Length: 378
Ligand SMILES: NC(=O)c1ccc[n+]([C@@H]2O[C@H](COP(=O)([O-])OP(=O)(O)OC[C@H]3O[C@@H](n4cnc5c(N)ncnc54)[C@H](O)[C@@H]3O)[C@@H](O)[C@H]2O)c1
Image (cartoon, rainbow, N blue to C red):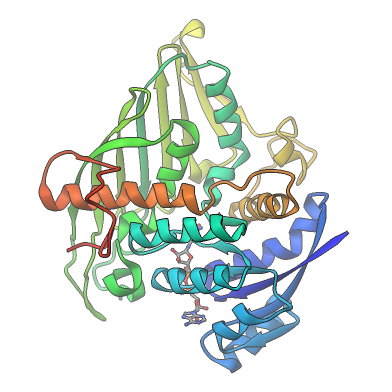
């Protein structure tokens, strides 16, 4: 069996989730490869050593460049604030490593596209952490759409609304600084676009409005948007809306998607991540939507649990994500969303930012867009 050695950079919220997945993936899914938690990097050697011990890594370093250059690392896993994704991913690809990176891929769509073409040229496997798109409920939704259960898709309604900055007196941290985060609520909550990419296809045009609700926080000015409302037109003719907010009191993970077609509607809500709601026009009746509860007939659920309705959680989606990365490295399945697919998501958020600045509709693949500055706000 091939052994792959993981180098994790960053050990905060996501670093811990990736470490949990790295330890679980071989137990949950039969693997063509064995994964070893080899090296952990964080800002400073003491912190890195402590976190390597806590998260079960063999070695540690306070220098991410040493991790990227380490011959004992095969996969570089980037779980740092957004502005570090581009230099870290670029250095890792130049060193010939496979790269697993948190979203958003980069601060500017030009950087994302550069990383995608570098990965292609070096023949490195890449994957971006759009974990919600791997929920077995979303896999089921994709199967239902593909086999025509909804008919011709005409409408999409997506939200990703949370309340992590609803308190105006809470410090914003790196997420409110343009140099470190790029976009605000939209960049952080762009997961909803990975769901539409998987289920509906690519948006071609967008019209968006951004708002910064709280302009000053205890740790300084807020430099990016708190909420976004956008209209979208998709290839294939569907139209829809996307809303993102980090100031929606009461919403903890309000990632929802509703897709309507000529024969029915599907509805998903991440706060109830084990349920899919279906309404079929040929079953029309006063009872409304039918609830489909996840069970072992979905293989990615069965791998965790033999009993229906017992439920998966947030971290389980990272295990599925890592399984997909390892399969791609082993050559048994393509990686999605790889850097090229993630660059298309960054192109949509970039187009939304341009639409907000200019007013009105803009094309996602506008050739004038996507250079330096890309999806950071003016
Ligand atoms: N996929 C998801 O569901 C999800 C959820 C939350 C965050 N994220 C993404 O994950 C990334 C990290 O977010 P987080 O919430 O884990 O942040 P965090 O602040 O909790 O953790 C960031 C980590 O990076 C480390 N770090 C910072 N600079 C570093 C450097 N120069 N060298 C090495 N380590 C460094 C920090 O010390 C910390 O351990 C972000 O890009 C964010 O958008 C994804």
